[in-house]
Structure formats: C-alpha cells, structure tokens
Image (cartoon, rainbow, N blue to C red):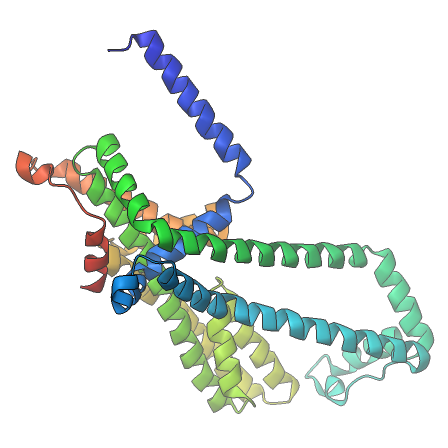
Amino acid sequence: MPTRSEFRARLFAALSLILLGLWILHDFLVPLTWAVILGLATWPLYAKVRRVFGALADAALPPLLLTLAIAAILLGPLTYGLVQLGQETQYVARLLQAAQKNGLPPPDWLGRLPRIGAWADETWTRWLGSSEAVRESLQHLLSSGALDYTRSLAAQVLHRYAAAFFTIVALFFVYRNGESVGRQVLALSARILGPEGSRHALHAAKAVRGTVNGIVLVALGQGVALGFGYALAGLQHATLLGALTGLVAFVPFAAKLMFLGASLVLFSEGEAGAGIGLTVYGLVVILAADNYVRPKLIGDAVKLPFLWTLLGILGGIETFGLLGLFLGPTVMAILISVWRDSLVEPVAETTATTPVKIADLGREAES
C-alpha cells in the first residue's frame, strides 16, 4: 500500500501529464470531439457495414468506406460552395472593374420597393451611379478595414475546412479502434463511478446519438416544410431553396435567415401578401421545430424530460457554441441518470456488478 505522500505524488504526476497532453492537443480537441460525436451517431450503421463484409469485418476496408461516404456528405457541399464562392468572387471583381469605367446603374426593382424605393435608388446612384462615385466608394471601403476583415474571414474559412478534414481523418480511427476504446471507457467508468458507471457511459452515448438524430431529422423536416412554403408563395426554384434550407438548418437560427431572405425577395417584387404569408408560415415551422419537435425527439431518445432537454440544448449552445448542441443534452442525461440511481434502492450485488459490453450500445440503438 502506498503511503499518503506517495499517493499524492502519483496523483500530481498523473494530473500534470493529463494537463500537458490537453495543452498539446488543445487546437485539435474540437475536431476530435466532432469525430467522436459522428462515430457514436453512426456506430449502428458501421456495425451493419461490418456484418455485410463478414470475414473482412476486422480489416480497414469497412471503416474506410464509411468514412469516405461521410466525407462526401459533409465535405462535398462545402467544397462545392467554396468553388462557387471563388467563381462569384471573380465575377464581382470583373463587375467592379467595369463599374470603375462606366458606373453601376441601380437595378429596376430597387425603385419599386415599398416606402424606401426612392431613397434606395437615390443612395445607390450617389454611391455607385458613376465611375467617380464607384472609385470614392471603393476607397472608403478599403480605408475602413473591410479588406483586412475579408482576409481574416477567408483565413477562418480555410481553418474550418482544415479542421473538418482532420475530423474525417480522426473518424476513421474512431471506427477502427472504437470497440477497444469503448471497452476501456466502460471499464474506467465502472471504476470511477461504481457498478453503475458503465450504464451512465451508455446513457451519454445514447444522448449524443439522440441529439444528432433529432437535429438531422428536424433539419430535413424544416427543409421539406419550408420548401412547400416557397412553392406556395410562388418563388422560383422552390425545391432548390428547400434543399438549401434543410442543409443550413443544422446550424442554429440559419433556417430563419433563409426564409426571411426569401420573404424579402417577395417584398422587393411587390408580392407583399405572399411575403407576409411566408414569414408567418416560416416562423410557425421554425418555432415548432426548435422549441417542441427537436427537444421531444432528443428527450424521448435519452429519457430526458422536455424542460431539461431544452435547457441542455440552450445552455450548451450558450456555453460551447455549436458543439454544445450535443454536449448539453449529454451532460443533462448523465446528471439525470445519476440522480435517478441515487433515489432507488441498491440492486442485488450480482446485478449491479454485471459488466456492460460495448456491443450493448449498438443493440440498444437498433431497438
């Protein structure tokens, strides 16, 4: 038995090593966390892929194929968007070159805007209507620091893209070594939290999966519902707008910007009634999805009350940003699980000490 001083020395050394490791990896903790979240959310699918391969299930091919499929889903639209952004940037550059020679006349629809049409047309003409006005506007824009902000934004976009690529690489190893790591996590949870520690760890994994599924399903539902709204309002390319809305709905409050922007387009075209109708319809869809449907789906998946699910989502976003969408309900699920266990009578020793296997997680998710 180590003495108290030896125990303190070992504890201090262990904590120092943990802190040192976290400090070394602090720039990669968020991508690693995203990889773990994606791995937990898609683990049942990965288990099915492994069953399909049979004897090759232990090879690198199943995790590689699933990782490439998820990379195509996540990075494909992002890459396409960056390519389109580059093309639009070139178009804007050519437009500015032409505007410096001849000016840029205001569009026809600008003067038809209700109440502010005349003011908007006059302002456009004053800032962009002639070559001299365009040169002065560009000089003012450059002197205001907008160019530095644009460069910073471009650097942030590239940084996020690199982080997403690292997340995909880490996801492969989550699939490849998930079972062994999962067994170690369950064993460590049981050692730290007692016989019920493994069950708490499984609750946390189910909370992550339930949150991911709730966000995905709600985002797709918002895209479909608002797509119908776009079509009823008479907007062109309603299907494409609905698909884009479903994609951006993964980001909190982004779907609101989509349908509000579509409503502004309707107002600019003189369709005030359709614009008001789309605004009201969109608010109803978004409020119902964000405040009832999503917390309901997540709460049912992890057996969380509605209030605690909602507080977990909102508090997680406030504390951790987008990552808090998943961390908030996960922490709430663990706390509620520990609270419930503290209120019940201790179970029999044979039952309490029965080990929980990592395979139980896949079976629970499929049931």
